[in-house]
Every structure is written in C-alpha cells, then in structure tokens.
Length: 73
Image (tube, rainbow, N blue to C red):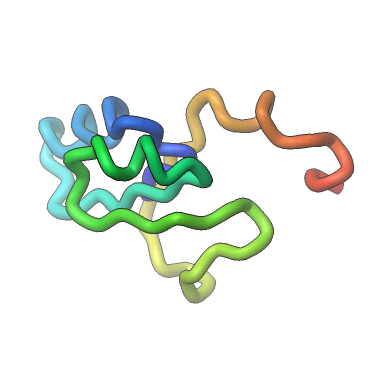
C-alpha cells in the first residue's frame, strides 16, 4: 500500500521493481484521479478501509509532516 500516494510516483516505482499490485490511498481525490496505481482508495489515517495485516509493505513517504500532531497520539 502506498499511503498518501499523491499521483502515485512511489507506487509506480515499486511496481517497476516487481510488485504485483500496489494499492494507493490518499485523502485528496484530485490526486487519485490522476494516479496510475492498480487500486485507489479515498481515506485518511483514522479511517482506513482495510483489515489488519492486509499488506506486506506500506509506503508512507512525505506524509507525516502533513498530519496534525493531535491525530498521531
């Protein structure tokens, strides 16, 4: 899963490296509309639509600095 995928650049890099499926998640639907990842979800950190342990790897690149501190703790 590429959490905070934006336009999907990091997820596409992972696909090119051999991943079979990359799921993109972002809070901004404009980014998801432009992404070329396999499956896309509109969601935030507090309401992810996935079961625990659904993914082998989670990317969260350039995300934490955009989350208000009170939501992290």
